Image (cartoon, rainbow, N blue to C red; front, side, top):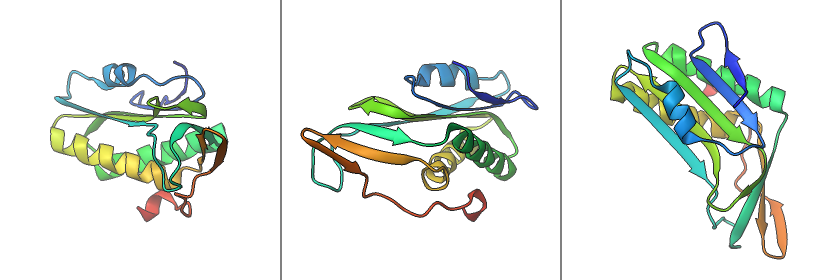
Length: 158
């Protein structure tokens, strides 16, 4: 996979793509000899939503450049909160994503599990509210922009 990597440290990898995501690839990439913990989170398309329709797929839209820039900000903030982190990867899909497919993957390595778990939770929670990403829910016979919306907040507000 090709995507934005923070070349200054070679420890941060953010990526926004229409291609399928691989949690195995990110877990392997995040594994480092000085890290005893790797936490990987995958968000997948589920069949339910607040609209009451049975969802068959989702469609994500964003500006790749803007989203990857914001992802790097989120990663930078995680590093300032947990300076002992090893590698951090955050990948997000755009375009059409089918039921059961992965839409977002976060992988974090650290010497110890507590920091890796805390950072992974922070990363996914902050990505959801600070990266401009629009989601259309698709069901048999129709579609609509998701009602699960919120104002986009700055990374520092988290």
